[in-house]
Image (cartoon, rainbow, N blue to C red; front, side, top):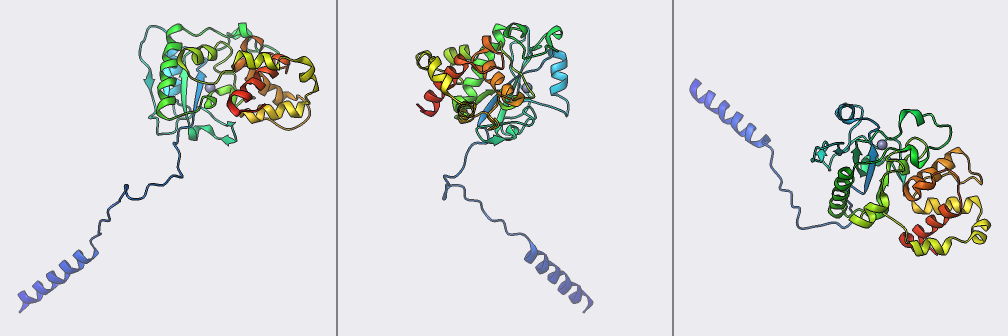
Length: 277
Ligand SMILES: [Zn+2]
């Protein structure tokens, strides 16, 4: 009798257990494929580390900052991948471009070991000149060219979204600086944006330029993607944007002042990439 009692208890426990066992539902990822989606990765941001190999590695391995890729200086022939592409790295900080902010969320960061500006020019009173920046090494640029080309094909990144840290944070950052060869990368590797010379010539018209108000020129910068205020003056924050634009597209004339040539390049870019007149 007692034995039967235990058997019934065991049977009840068994039934109880099996009835709470979780049913596993299958996930079908083939039947309904949505169109409303995009890649996490929409931008590529280029940096210099402002330090030598050893300090750069140490900084990028710390918990303060990181980047997806690291390009060392010297003989080392590797490109280092520190953070998987599908994860966020901490390289951009407070940033915006083309109406998006916090670009860590949507970008891949590439750090290049380059000292940036030698100490004697670091406290230069106005914007640093082209000659103040340190040259990149030939192999570094070859690595960047290959890497950015491969990434931009893989993630379908538009030319206009391949940017300098200074483009997305003009009042805080100058990297990768005036010596970073954007034109060469465009011409040789087909990466990033560059204007057509004939379009620039078209807009090298002082009479037309002199009629443009500050607000109109700021609108052109904003249309291209730069975050800029809408006041009718070239205040410090707005000049920082001009300087960032010049570091990228007119580095030998990076003064922080708007001028005819800078304006003509901006108009040429908007004609080419935004199909604006
Ligand atoms: Zn940077």
